[in-house]
Image: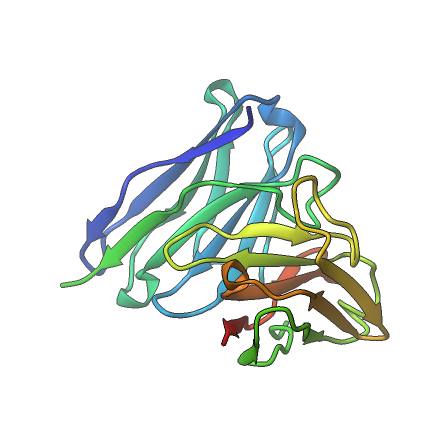
Length: 120
Length: 110
């Protein structure tokens, strides 16, 4: 059974760094692109970027380029989303997701989400 | 890249049909047959309902159907049921090799 299990909720202060994770199981981790999606409180879904764990090929939405870093450690089947200096506006639910059919043009499996709260 | 345009809300009575539109440009919706639709209930992760414009994943009701004309894609739900009440999002592959979501549509079953 394909599963994506994300790390737990985080409460951070502005300016702090953070790295959240998404562990894949039940499939060959290097075979599928893993993407990240943001959902700010009461708002819609936003595509942030995606990584191909096999070779770490990474693509970012222009809105998130330079704001976050997506990475993956294929030895432990885990993808990451990280910030070097959080802002209050980073408060959101973050989902990881994969496409097990072909490429990354849609997501058919999703993680449960990680809630990030940034507040002084 | 701008978000795809969806109506903020649609509503319908049980048994009726509704259609949600998703308008983009020739650089996304109009340029590729890679439009997908997601359903999201409050507090839950999104669920894939339609991919590649009109394909339904296994287990998704055949009351849902997708189509596209030019730069506008559409999701139709027929025989509305209370369980269909949720937020719906479209997404499309883009010429920048990224994906872009629509703003989302809240479906209310009256």
